[in-house]
Length: 161
Image (cartoon, rainbow, N blue to C red; front, side, top):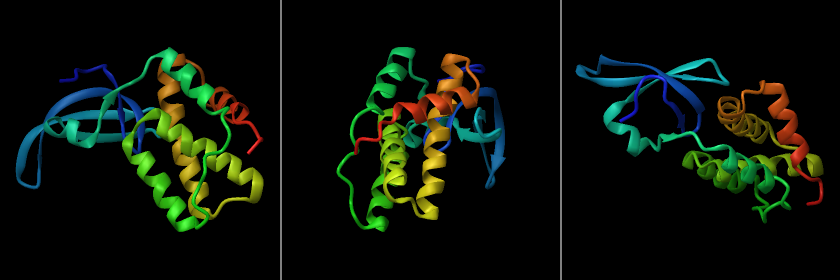
């Protein structure tokens, strides 16, 4: 069980801080919810306490894990599906895991693909969401501002595809 002030990650949205734990009635059912403030989006999310494991909520990673993830951005582009629709679905599945390394692969692949031939509107949005996911976690760990972290992410991705 998490407590107020804990820093956690909600898959597909990113990292934030538990601001409160409150009983709420939703759909005629009263149960405890974590009230989480997402750092990068200024978004507040209600998370049912009894569903955190099912949803995939986890604690934020440590600095050594962030360092390893940044190194993974320097690797060459992964083999990707040529069909943009299948590629989009594969990337979406990676994002849903909430795993920082899987999200980093999406960021790396889409940045490199954008440099090679450009992205569809959907892939641009996905890249932005994936980058924000990583940024939200790094902001909590490194105490740097969003722009510094975005620069670090973008500069870590090498152009050799």
